[in-house]
Length: 175
Image (cartoon, rainbow, N blue to C red; front, side):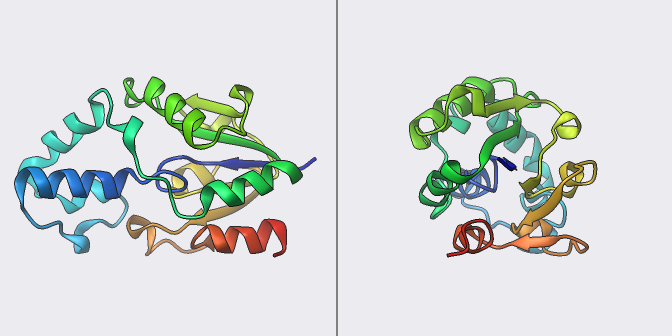
């Protein structure tokens, strides 16, 4: 059975959208979409980068993220055809470990705990395919690489893209 490695943040969960909504409610300042090349946190005013990082480090932030549209249905189907692992570089934000595990078990109950990998660096991960929104995670991956489109990676080239979960369904399930 072929193995598919799937990132969590900006692929099946929406921390960027959650952070922008929180920031707008809290500070009412505009988000600068022109500054986000490489990292969505650059869209916040520089004087608030510390506040944004603090929010990312806070308990509960990753527990209540929105689910990316169609990801649950497509991954349920893919899980019957492929060996799926959800792999998230979570140790950068230590409070996210329990939050992410609880979030995954709630929204993707068809995945076993054995399919959930919360780690620091994805270079040790191997498989046939990887879907991730960051090139830094795809560079070392030995299998077929798919860059999941996110506003912060629009200028990246050299990778096949998956723009949404309907497109992932067409690629992986031929439907």
